[in-house]
Image (cartoon, rainbow, N blue to C red; front, side):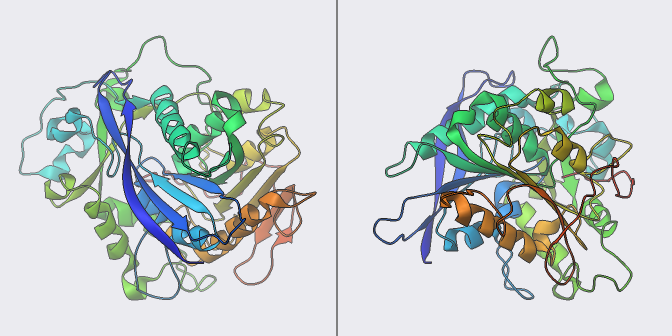
Length: 406
């Protein structure tokens, strides 16, 4: 289906300590399909993770190799109104001025900007938090649903740490506006906090919260990705190194950070946040929304050491177990890592998401995949998905600590 794209900004009143009360701009790219007469609109909002902006994650433009990388354009061709957003401090949305000062980056990363001398943070506390993310997400959701011809509910997609924003939003913040929830490689902190700290922003421990931003650099980005790419012949072409996909992705990072690309060797800035309200205690307490009024589809990679990480108590299967509703599906993609959006198995991800969203108006089983509305499945490197119960243990995944979690 033909579609057009448009870049927009949505005004939002910030509730951050760093710029409280200021009107900031949230970047949104809208892919608008040319629908046939009588077909209702289906809005889908895609929310990025911790360190990769929206357009890099969901609309990578590349002619290299085989197949499309842009997940957003795949869904627009399916007939969805697809919206890709950046939260404040990310990509093309407003960045608080504290992010313009190199002294405010993680002290452990300042050596990457040599020969500049190390310096103490001038804003010695973390920047964003769950409440600010939920408020910004809510502003964009309300703006989308307020557009002409839109329904009263929206499908939400959250990638990696984007689950901290869309998960609680669909569970307790404003579930009445959410039609379904699709989580890709969701970060789910088994021992994460249920409630906010007594005061925000947080500054202690200093080594964790005493600065407002991190930076991503090419060497660390590639090293982290390399750790999840199989060197054995089980999954040939998991990442398209023949066409230098690492450089393609890295160039997209720099294109979305015009200031960061001028620092040192060229870096991508991302905010240091404090998140809560997304753990087994909170999810198991929800008996009406996740998996009931809001169907849930979870997808992750077999080789993902970011979303499944025993030392950090991150577990995707634990999230599936915690959702109490009956309308929940989980698919594990063989031969895929945390960065599956840029790997070969992205095509299986695109297929699963198209089936999920296409089924929204099914008369008896809305939001299904191949007729299934619940269960756990493995998607092999080749062939059809196989139903398999692999949720009885904590995780089957490697436990290496990721260098640059997304």
